[in-house]
Length: 207
Image 1 (cartoon, rainbow, N blue to C red):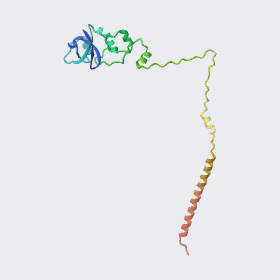
Image 2: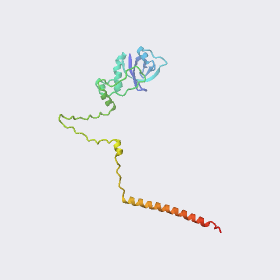
Image 3: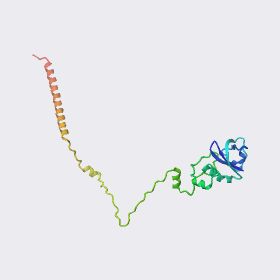
Image 4: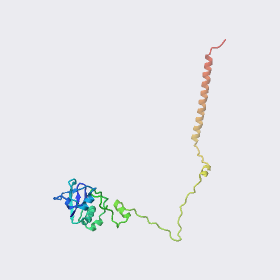
């Protein structure tokens, strides 16, 4: 006999020989992931070095194969008594990592769903509407879009750059600055002449 059990701590399910389960149906012996496949297939008796795990028995059957559909239903709906119609309406969850089983099949989305539909439903985002394209009928003129001609770079460089007219106030200020600069130069030259004259006057006169 076999039993479909739920490992409470890991929140995963597995099909194991009924002899691995304790008499009170509260715990189960587990050989470990590396040797679980062979131990289940051979229905080996539990060993002392196996771990003891808290479980919850979900279903019991005489063969391993009888419990596979119920295990699939439980992974989809967390309920082994769910009908097939309800399983089809239930969206498959993401891939669930099952610690105690490395040889069971991996659940995928239903085969009757197209890849685009499956990706849309799994993400929960509705697909964007496809805009309708209207083809021109025979004899109908298709409007063309006006495009500015591209001017070659050589022509762009040869074209003269328009000069911007300066305001009158700017020209007046420019003249004033030039006058001030000229006055500053004149003052500098005058100061140099004055210093030279003072130096000459301070020198003693020879008889």
